[in-house]
Image: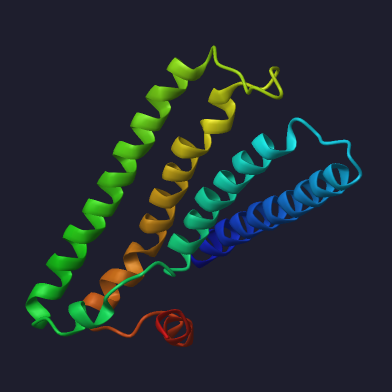
Amino acid sequence: MARLRAGFELLLEWVVIVLMVALSVEVTVGVFFRTIGLSLSWYDEIASVMLAWLTFYGSALAALKRAHIGFPGLVNGMPPAWRLAFVLVTEALVVGFFALLGWTGYSVLEVLATDNLVSLPWITVAWTQSVIPVSAALIIMAELINLPQVMREARGLAPSGASDLAEMTH
């Protein structure tokens, strides 16, 4: 499981890095051309698509690193008998939400299949919006990869890689 997690984390890190670099270059080029009076008609639209992609894929990476806002004190303050049940219910809610988001996002792609970007008409809106179901699936994978460790913590057992846990929670 640790090997799967490490590989998944590396993949998401590279996706996020590539998107950040591409977005930075794209915006810099767009600003440069606007400054010299030769505005690119497509750079605003592509920048907003890339920012959305960066946000969604970055969220999957944050889910894997357990870096989203959380309340570990709430779980830790519960009686030990309630912790595991509470954690399982909350994880089920998170996975259920992203399953619904992914399914709805996938359903919308069919509606958007005939729409194209305004500035680059050869790019379909469905392709740009595919980030929603894809990132939902990635977030679900991240939650499921973390589930064994989350369950160990809820039971009060020492997590594998306790130094990693301390780093993630502080």
